[in-house]
Image (cartoon, rainbow, N blue to C red; front, top):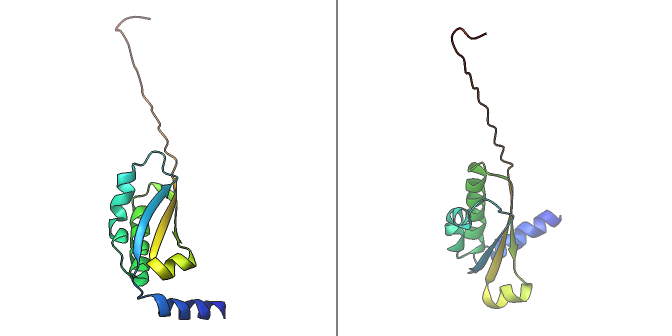
Length: 116
């Protein structure tokens, strides 16, 4: 029942104009911000909630395809009053980078003929 209510409400507001105010990135330690922002460029251009939803799905999938994150979560944050008056939303992107392992192996052989 709650699911039906959500879908009914979404259908009602999906074409309402909006503006993505900001994108806050959390959890990237080694990955540069520009790598993530590159994948989210189209998201920042979204003009409706439906467009935002579709572009968030695409951008999240693109980040996962880079195979450097084990966790990708996006939260759309807007106060109900702010949504009604300005249509402005803030995005919070939470990431967890995959562990990187460096393994080094080598062999050194030194030998001389006739030495025992």
